[in-house]
Length: 522
Image (tube, rainbow, N blue to C red; front, side, top):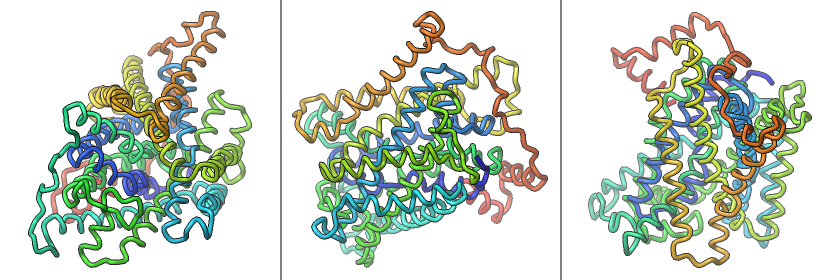
């Protein structure tokens, strides 16, 4: 593969890569079911985990920018069963075409399904993304850069407009303040409030999915020692501003019972409502286009992540060797086309049962599996750092050192187990087991059991190879950890060294503060 992703590609992907249908399409209903404070707390909790995961992955991949980090790093620093299970789990998450189903649903806002079948829109949007990913990694980077830029601009405008609406601009009733936080968490009893709170986690995880993509892109970054830390440094502020800020504003400018929150079409959307309040009457069409663009961006990233994950799995011996074939442009084409095959399954499912059902089923499945992948990487980072220090290595040799170690990893794992407990209670508490339950609770009977069964089966397999089943689950000793294979040693230019040094010094002038803030956010 070729290192053609520039720093601006990685930074914009880190900023806008996670802004998709989870935030723009599903967040309103989350506030309706959980209440404004409940949804805000859930997004804040998951945002903390995102920060811990992103910094931990960043430390590992800047030192070892391997392809297929979600299989290679757990296999190298924990054990092979975890690498096998996490690698295939991560590939499956990205290969399931939930965003394609969302696009099909969104297009019916303009063109009814009776005129053009909604599932056929998946083909229309999938084809150009396959072509882009077949050209080169630079093509993926440029297209994703533009789409992420549009998403960031639109969300930034919403934050400004939403704040004006909250302060009462354009209204005769004055500032809204917290009049709609009544109640802040939905539910007639403590148990009901807990269930409504827990139910918001699947949307939050689905919304944040993709924030870990830096672990995949690092293997093709032009200079991962410089560009990856730059992409990670602003993670906390990006989560706080774009996600927490958006959820907060939606919760304070609209009642949880309003048609804009509960509406099933883009015309009844909190984002559209905010723009209409300041006179932008074409907001519904604009936001529908932006959400479709966001879903297309997710499809683009899905194809990229899938092809690189399969390449990494093949390199680690977890997948057939032909998935490691790369063409002259550096594209792992066998992994790409095999992943497209799974995307086509989404078209078949959309035709059979309807795109909205497919999207809801897949979003639930992907949400919790993404969380399991994050937990695996947090545990892997703990083992990475402990093993690194146990071998007498110096932290100064790491291009990027994750802050607050080991507490952010402990926090990430704690949040993961807490969420599993919350949603398990919520999904079984006084539920009617109908079609809606099976659609919205796919992780219960398909997601988590699949991950655990793959881990256990692979552990038994590797244990039998050693003559002892339990030995397959043994942790790799610190002394045997490999920190040299795939290590990238680059000589930075004087200009790159000066830039890296400058952004870590305290700004002294207005110009330096502007440059510092721009670096942190963008």
